Length: 389
Image 1: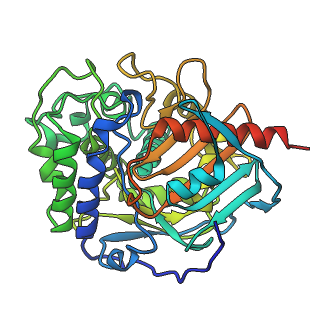
Image 2 (image 1 turned 180 degrees about the horizontal axis):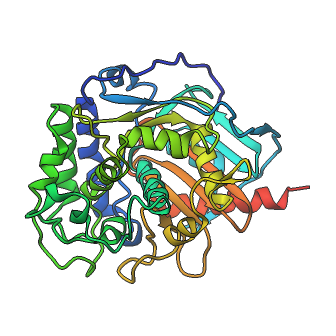
């Protein structure tokens, strides 16, 4: 992948989320039926730089960077990565090309041992899509530590009475986090509808209040993006601070993010929470590094260590590959990742002390096999460990 410069275009604040996002969500949702069951629902799309012109119409709020960013040292070294998947030996170069990867950052601790861009550069902001859900989880953990939230076993309507009488009435915060809310939801059908409403400037809090219950909360796993919007709304109501400001003050700045980010909103004061962070690959990697270090940055606890452990371990027997808005490596494995449709990932390997941030632009090259992604990331992490020192 060649390293080519790309002119950065910043989305403007305070206008409507893009129609392109709604169309992209529709495409993303179709992936769910063909994704391995344990990883089904990792939908969340990506757009940049080609789609960034339309992003200029997006409803976004600015999240300002840290004045003391975590230093990532350039320490490139040769990594010879091969892996076997479905009986075929493959290479990292082939995988990155085949999946349309536009940004790829590999950290060995704070050392950047591999960094590649294609039609982009270090300043390019990539759309997170569902990777945003893991940031929302971190915000919930911090709000819990600060006692804005008493317990994740509390019903969400204890804090959001606006949802009384809806399908969310009495549903615990825990069941929202582990995608087991009981809401009558089909991600293929309903996620695009929700995004289209945000595009038209309709309040998503009203959309959430119209949702109905279809099954017993906690009884099964059902990937439901509106759960994450409700969690973002919960942050706003319980902390008295808009979600994007809370992320800025409690995560982005103390975690040492180097660049400003832009967070999507519905045009009515509510951040989306389920998608639409626009940030650099290096800052996505810094978020992974934060979790690799048990929630610490600059030696200070940013996300509670107990929350990092809790959110990256199985949250239910309904899906042992899902924590609290994080995807897990599986039984006997320690690794975990945030995942967005099209191949947007933040992968963390505690075993090898490695973080990988993978950014893409679109899903034009087809659906992404999340099991193959996990296989590749493990091969990269093992090679980083092998070549260390």
